[in-house]
Length: 246
Ligand SMILES: O=C(O)CCC(=O)C(=O)O
Image (cartoon, rainbow, N blue to C red):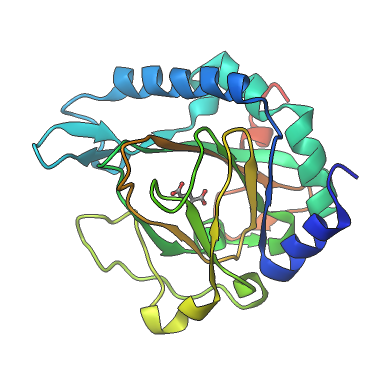
């Protein structure tokens, strides 16, 4: 086993767990630098609105990089590293297959909040327990720069309805607030190189970055060969592409 029994038990009891030191901070520093270069390259006035934020002075700042795996080779070896997949295999008890990836960028002061949601509302996958997100911390992450926050045990409940409270953010669908038990919220504080793992049905959010530091998280989404989806999630998964190097 690539983790303690306590970490495994925590994952299944709470729906999330942090494992520190999966990557060396220097490796992560290089990948974080590359993420900045890629997002700089992509930032133009025509950037799709869902990948950028507007700073108060009107300038555009990065919010996310979509499908980084296909943008730089270095991202591929980083996310397919066996130090990561060995932990995932131990957590979900089946062979993990890379389904998708995205890098969430929260620039100092301007990084916007990601409202509460369940990944499986979007993925619509079954069995939900085979679907997991491994979120690699590319900075030291805490409450002030917008760490992930989880509703503990929410993965044991159903996928909730999600609504669009803000038409300017059609990518941010949110369950009705009365269905989110904030008394069970816990913050996932993690050092650069550590990884936060969450079950596809765990409710999670992150607040604005109010610090003067970056908060970059490399989210990798995994499933198994048995996973099916009501939508095209599995059909379009990376592991089903002819050019997938895994
Ligand atoms: O990085 C964030 O703030 C949001 C991440 C997220 O929602 C995810 O990885 O599923």
